[in-house]
Length: 136
Image (cartoon, rainbow, N blue to C red):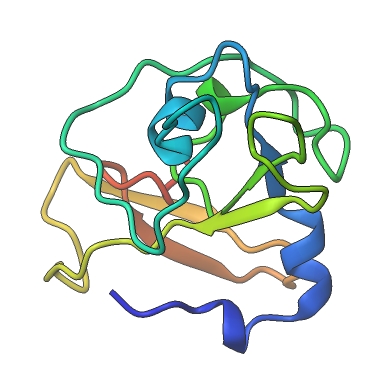
């Protein structure tokens, strides 16, 4: 897929990222790709299996500071904080790019959900409850 971050508001990028826990996160381990005690970061990483998540959090604060992998359906920006293991004094960022797929514009019966739009005067939108972007 193609990145959408270049088209987003920069403040959205800063506020909607979370850091992985270096000690407990399976996703950190996969992205780190450790060799000889230091991360060997790859430009593109494709996960070949589902990983157990680590940590839950609430959507009360932004940016998120505690481990919260289990609270997020589909991450957008993932930060690996600087450390001896990452081998850098700057954070390392990964972006999740959703695989391309074909979806029906209006889901079939029993899978549709209607959600009121935030900041809208009576507006709503339709979603497919099977997708992580749906609130149903």
